[in-house]
Amino acid sequence: MAEETPLLELVKVCKAYGDRWALKNVSLKLYPQEVLGVVGASGSGKTTLLKILYLQETAQGEYRLNVPGWEGRNLLLLSRYEQPAARHYLAMVYQDAAQALRMGFAALTNVAEPLVLRGERRFGVLAAEAQEALEQADFPLERAGDPPASLSGGERQRVQIAKALVQKPLAVLLDEPTTGLDLLVQATFLDTLRRLKRQLGMSLILVSHDLSVVRAVADRIVVLYQGEVVEEGLADQVLEDPRHPFTQDLVAARL
Ligand SMILES: Nc1ncnc2c1ncn2[C@@H]1O[C@H](COP(=O)(O)OP(=O)(O)O)[C@@H](O)[C@H]1O
Ligand SMILES: [Mg+2]
Image (cartoon, rainbow, N blue to C red; front, side, top):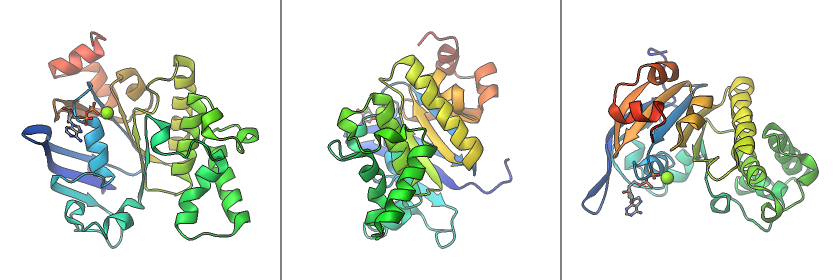
């Protein structure tokens, strides 16, 4: 795996808010068809990391995307006008569905929206692609006409997944997607992520404060502690032989 070309790569990324560091020298790689789990306590910089990856936040350091036309570019130096083109390769799933969805519009409309923004106007194509994405996200199709406002928390997250999938991104970034869901809903949602990885070969970055969420899906795990990567490795290796005291406490479920 080490010799494979990563899809995306951060090298020594730093981010400060005022005089406080949110991220310090964060380096990480995401390889094709892998799930990278990022775990850390509240305030450790997880959301900041995803915002930087999604080009919603400025930062120092290097960010590379290994796609034709973008090799060698540091995405952290892109102008605001170039950012949307780079962002096309990624999709984001938020903890709070209201950040991504129009809560009063039909689920199907929400999922079709990214295609409309890309210029697709044929209703049949929009409906067919949105439906296929909802199906891939294990969303109950009989509710495709319902607005997220009337859906359950788990269903809303599936609409977000569908909205991500319809864009056919290289990687999906998920920020605490199951936080606030009850355990059974959480488990079935994580089943869907595992299947997407297996069947579609999706690359995911799954962020959570909850190690049990990350361990359910991740191939590799990165542990963030006060804005720094303190541990990283294959999931089994990190879980069986944690090196950093914070990870040891996480694994021993003392946190
Ligand atoms: N827009 C912001 N302005 C100032 N401080 C921020 C902002 N966003 C995050 N922070 C700070 O950066 C640190 C990391 O936050 P965040 O990335 O949200 O952590 P996490 O997602 O792991 O809970 C925290 O100390 C937080 O207060
Ligand atoms: Mg967060």
